[in-house]
Amino acid sequence: MKHITDFTIVGREQLGKQYFSLTLRHPQQLPEIAAGQFVEVEVRNNRDVMLRRPISIHDVDPQENTLTLLIQMVGKGTRQLAQLQVGDQLNLIYPLGRGFSVSGSNPLLVGGGAGIAPLLHLAKCYKAKGIEPTILLGGRTRDLIPVREAFEPYGRLLISTEDGSLGEKGLVTQHSQFGAHYDQICTCGPTPMMKAVGRYAVQHGISCQVSLENMMACGIGACLCCVTDTDDGHKCVCKEGPVFDVLKLKKWMGIE
Image (cartoon, rainbow, N blue to C red; front, side, top):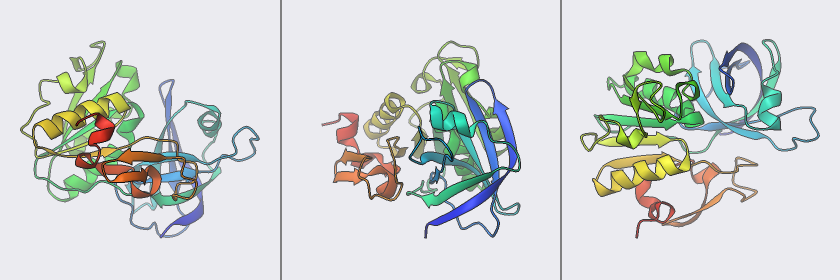
């Protein structure tokens, strides 16, 4: 069931120049939210921003009745959201899409850039099942890997930066601990990164889930602007994703 609700901002944190987080409290009990699901955020009083903005759910705290969004400032909508303060209201449609399946006994979670966002909730879900995931976060520089410390209680944290400013130097797929010894890979981030991770998983017979990024204006599959060509035909990323089994995305990855 989808909900449309005004949340109250109870926490805001600036995370470097490009990222910030908003912690939102629901007026009633939050519904169950799967890792990898997202919200559609209303940007009010801005004629240049007519559509809601899709944003991954970064964290959920059922006891505090809050959810947290990790947001990258990339356009007019997200820059206006960055001006919000504690006490302001934010209207959400939620929870949207299909999330990750918390499966496997030795999982690897791979995130890059804003794709780091849904992996914190996913890491917590694994930890709640008694499974410690390996979490590999990558970015061009250390400044583009926000909230990395938040992952440390929930798994083995690895870092890869292209300039070598933090962790190992190189792409996530070049990290010394990236390999075929995992039985499940979950990834979210830039498309080239996800394609590389997905191709590796297919080549090595590893189960893999990919969270696609696309333009998602409505979030419920009505506008059809987020349709992606999969091996099962055209699918709406917002409704039938954003998380897909990589074996359904061979066309997307360029695998014959």
